[in-house]
Image (cartoon, rainbow, N blue to C red; front, side, top):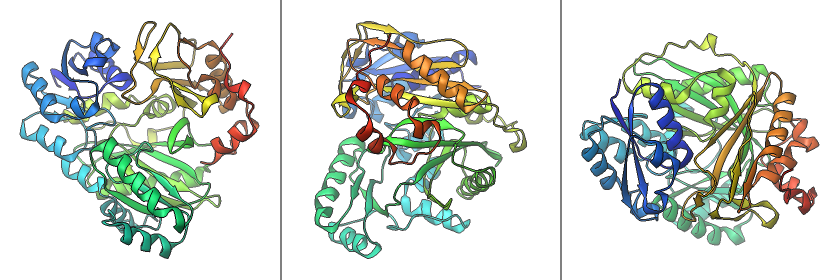
Length: 458
């Protein structure tokens, strides 16, 4: 096992990794920007090194500074978390060149699955259906426009180098195509340092379903069942649950096997996620594979009782996967609400600032993954997520009721958050019935009064 791991990330995921490392007796090194000096991951790591100023381009995206910190602290592994350099194949390759274990897939796998054309070809080769679209990066506006016209609107333009809704634009007609194309490229360049984009046919009102994968270095691959990530705004996930209330057992099994086939074909190692869109008729389409840990991995952990981050470390250290697919069971239902520093009553406007009061909920079946506390300042430079609130129960109804209770207890003063939005969703008849698609948030906001989004707690 590793002796010391550097976490090339920040916030709650850095803290999550630090906690698991401590449980395994591994020392940790945190890296941080100048504005993150008071973050919990910096305070709880065994060592911490500042790697630059606030902007990600000057700190968390600076591979040279991260490797400088790794050399100074003499680490034997780096965990990239999610975002930033997590799916950067060059960074993973540099880790190998420096004789530092990269806690993630092989560099060539990251490159292969990060190339949308290659990823689609892999899926097609194992007979998994894909969404119609470009065979890879679109090289010019004219080429993109011609393809969009040929496959028919609406189409969606996506950043080739990342996810999380960044660099993603929906185009409903040819008139607005060039404007949206330029905006997608600009946002992709700003978010990932890479303006490359690709294009797909937009499947209207689908369910966004993903399957968690674990794979060791000996070729053993399993999936940890599904997550429904359909509740999203501007392609940013807000609420997730596992298992999906939409999938039948037959469809769940078929999609799980498809996910494993894709992972096997690309020689996948470590943790990853295969993502699909499922239309109202139950037809599913592969869209991408995220070669990293996911934000929402926690609900899969709660449902299966399997520690995914622990297995990331064990697999990277050469341990064999001891879990068999037949033993992966739905043990309970879990829901995750992302608590963001945003004002839902004002079109989810960002709300960075000082947290004057912080009280997190607790009790049986409640989990809070967060890096903040009273007195902490939410910086304006990064993702707005404050915490991930997860509840679980023997039934979906209990998980929802527990989430409603937990959200009512959650107090964060000094800034606006998405707590009232999530609380209102828990009371929504459509959500309670499990009858929702990726269009849910848009419809929900149209029928929900603003005072429901201004709830401040008890």
